[in-house]
Amino acid sequence: MEITSSPGMSEPEEIHTMAVYDRKTGNVVHQHHVVRFKGAPKRSKKELAEHAIALARSQTGFEGSLAVLHTVDDAFDQPGRHSVDLKTKQLRTEAHMPTLTLESSQRTRDAR
Image (cartoon, rainbow, N blue to C red):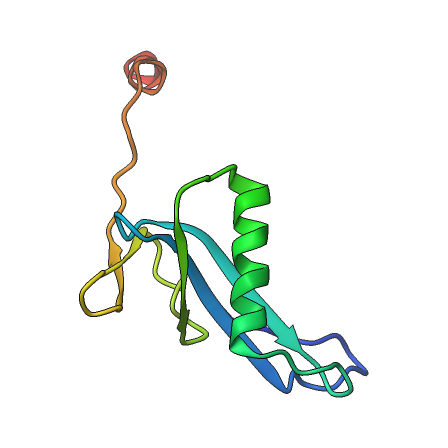
C-alpha cells in the first residue's frame, strides 16, 4: 500500500500495517494501517494492536478470539484471500476466484 501525503505536508515518520486474524483459523478479518506524522505521539505495538482489534470487532461484528500480525507496509498489495499461517505466523495470500452467481451467469448468456 503506497502512502502519500498532501502537498505541503511532511512525509510520514512511521507506517504500521497489521493483519487482524481469527486465532482458530488464521483468516484475516481486518487489515489495519496506521500512519504517524511528525509531532504525533508514538504508540506501542501493544496499543496499536489493541486499537486494531477494537476496530475489527466494531466493523465486522466478529466475536471470536483475535490476534494481530504486524507486517510490512505492502503486505496486502497482492489481491486475494489473506490468512496467517498459525505455525509460522507468516501472512499468506491465496488467489481469489470470483464466485459465479445465477445472475452473472444469466447476464453472460444474455450478452451472447
